[in-house]
Image (cartoon, rainbow over all chains, first blue to last red; front, side, top):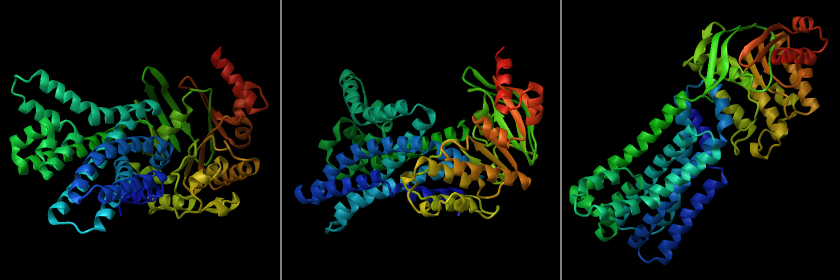
Length: 262
Length: 236
């Protein structure tokens, strides 16, 4: 077993016993059960869940990830004084948080669905929803780690984390809409595509809405995306960009961690 | 033996260490002392590889402190603040460090008994008092009988009984030929333990030598007064 997987083992044991994770899993369990029970058919519940997932996962993950790294600061120093390399320790901390958070989400949404019969199409959509949720967990944990490692002031770091979430989850769409209106007379397809790729939450939304094939819900950017790539390749491009959003913050975090003075 | 040559470190505009040259001898207890912001913690962190030097080198047992973490297999570290994962127990923490140090000395947790920690071993660490967590912190530092033990304010938060146990252990380690590096504000504690003193002031070595010679040099009977004299000289 590598040093990283040994660290993951203990970090996971710590996180899965935290009240945060229990609350997080419970929230998805209740939300999914409620939507399935009172919201009509599973297809409708999946559309409603999409909005919950796209809003809640980035917020909880970025806040929890930042706080997790700040509160582990002294323990990280103790681990760094052991014969363990920094890349292994970073991998251990990163996976030690992303795996339980992803597990909590998958269990919270998956269990109520597993208790009911699902047709093939809804089953596929559920899998896409779970995949996007897990991808966002990894992407926003990476961002949280970059913020917490680059900013030693805890209050400021938490402020930046919440601001980053607010920009990507709320302000961004409004900004895109304003730009689209302002430059309505210009060919906007390519700039719009670039703007979409620059926001992991938008990418997650596109993957899921292309899957639902509800163009009315896709908004301007989603419609452009579908028109430009078609459903199949559109999903592939969005998914690849989402993977980039996992890789870049994780690598940036690992680089910062390797060079940081503790 | 620890050989430090030309060690410099800057944080922003502040020069924390300025071309430090000092040797810490094997098999002795060496105290790093000095006024606040003299660079004590930075020096300790650099020995452990937690901070990187801007210039200069640190050699521990002949090996240059750098990217390769394996030299730390022979180091035990007790940080000033004992904060651990909330939901793990002390027993799990001991198992974790044992897992990370495969191939070294087997863990020797006799301090658990001497600190009377047995009943607390399986409780989540967040339920333990600050003093009990500090005892766990000490257990971890001595666990693998390392050749070099680095202690940062070790008595902070310990009751007199636990503090005595810890001091006895430090002296036993020295008796076994191990090197102990200690940073502490408690001069009475250092007077009891330290063979050698490294006095830092403004990032430079103000004095490096035996405790006895420092007292002679400053014509003081206690270490506290000798250090105070050094600080006043430094300020003058």
